Image 1 (cartoon, rainbow, N blue to C red):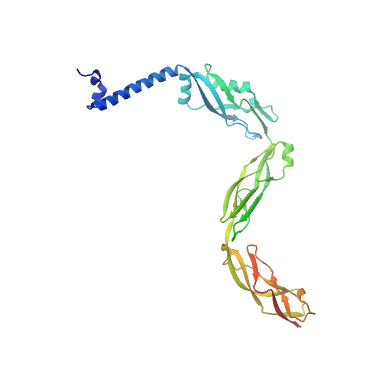
Image 2 (cartoon, one colour):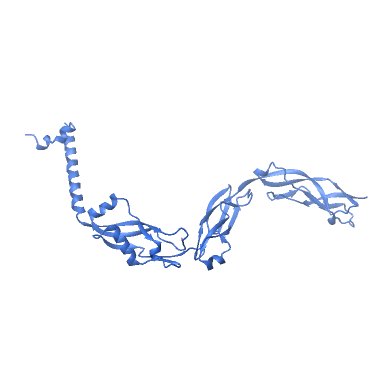
Length: 324
């Protein structure tokens, strides 16, 4: 006699001939039926879940909060499973709070625990029980004063790696920010500073975001800026530079031997092929006319800011003084 399940239409629909395949398919059907029954029984019972409600405060455009306002409220709620399932099917509701309903009209926005619980309870219906709400209340200071633009002072310490240098100034995407605060606090703020930044052993140009140091009772927009620290590799270069004489009287001509000197220095790669104004000088006031020797010290004059470790091949040269 054939088992009764051999006559199941599902087998005929899928044209299942193998007994092993029929057994697996039959097992799957029973598991599905069991799952449906389990869900039906469970959803009729009370269950507890934890969820987050996004917070949206409807406020005028000129109002700025000076202290943190939570983005979400974490709620632990108990209700029938069928009621809570609707929450996962429907879009998550937002907890909307009207600014004018909870503002004291001066400087404080406050939603106490009872008010917050009452607003949240409306989101879940009468059958739901709220076990916990975090945070339990909202209390924030605000201002309706217009923002004040102040400069940003960088607090940055840079140490390039060996044979590297900082070539140029540190740049940033914003050199000033808007500060919002009450009238008294805003009047006292004339500048803001970044947090201290220390970068060492840099071998390439660095870009990073730096937060602005907070001021109690004030907020800034933006709250951080991006800085760029230009770092380049140093290369060694030499060139012969003519020696010029300074501070000589009009009737005196100083002839130098040699009249030029080889100068060696390190420079960033981007500056290596540029003809910068490097000078070497002799100061007439350093000539000792009473000395039997005829040598005068030479020294570097104008040195471009990008040059480092400037060295002269000689420290003095011979001279002859000619009077007109």
